[in-house]
Length: 258
Ligand SMILES: [Zn+2]
Ligand SMILES: [Zn+2]
Image (cartoon, rainbow, N blue to C red; front, side, top):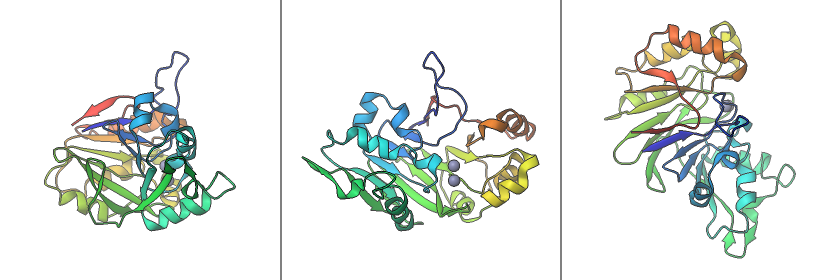
């Protein structure tokens, strides 16, 4: 399985900048997990191939360019873009994003081939298929209804915490997996901002370490994401100080393969 954390911004030579402002992972050039930078960072072949987007929660940094992605493709789509999310999140996307004010109600519109956007609700705790992948969504603890994801291609398995503060169900789900090749997990704020992290539903390096200790065996690789750009240097130093083997900040624009 190939996974890329899409960059949010580029330098003057077009290279990915390391700071992550938006969240969107591209899996096997075909499935998007969240859609923060989806419309900004795909190559043309990827744009032509991605028709499934799994949304963990409706926060803007995770859905910002989903409407633009569909808009870009509107006349070319021969099958709809499928947005996979819980019923609750689908409802929020219809009411708060594709609501005819912020952007068109794409789920009610058609091009000459048919619908351009279809919501595909999933249940938490039950495996479901997206393209060639098997996914399980597990509720995590954030400011709005949010799920973490376990994604498998039949060989490798990778888990994504999405945005979360202290949580339980996600870690016990990971403990039950026969294999876990990598975990992409958030650490948004520095340790000094633990109270803000707690009320906004995020982790700090310190609380991340406490969460990881809930696992009975460590994932082969731990990639830290969602590091707030303004505190990046401090958070990176605090992550380093944890001295956790196989833990590093996930690089934007790099293709990881398991
Ligand atoms: Zn969030
Ligand atoms: Zn976020």
